[in-house]
Length: 178
Image (cartoon, rainbow, N blue to C red; front, side, top):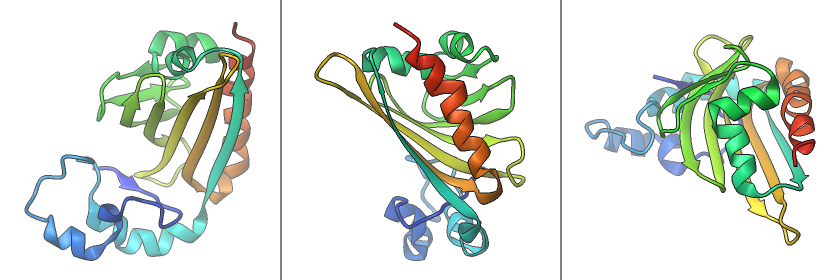
């Protein structure tokens, strides 16, 4: 099970209400099977939420959304862009490992050419804690892509490092692609 670290109340209602957790105790969680809802709502939320932040980036590229998606979701292409080994499942609920194992997690939502959402953790995160990295892609009028990253639940002490990581390891090399 993944312990999701949440910064704000923008999580789906079914993940953050006690009533919903009690109602669904006997039902299998098919939408987010790796999340223990009671853990999300319980002490973890009360203790960890003040110590996390959200990163939000909006970046434009000259290449189409389908190519950007492939650069982020395909193991071979991501390894090529970052210069670091990446192993990424193409299935929702599948695991991924990037940057030679420094970043690991689970695919939460995959919509080719449009959206990539991952429960994401880097070495240095508190044990068992994952953040949520959501990337949405939209075509621009000139055939490029507008990418919006919303990375919630980043431990406060790693905020600057992870923000620089996204810019240097991903956005800069991706902007060089044609």
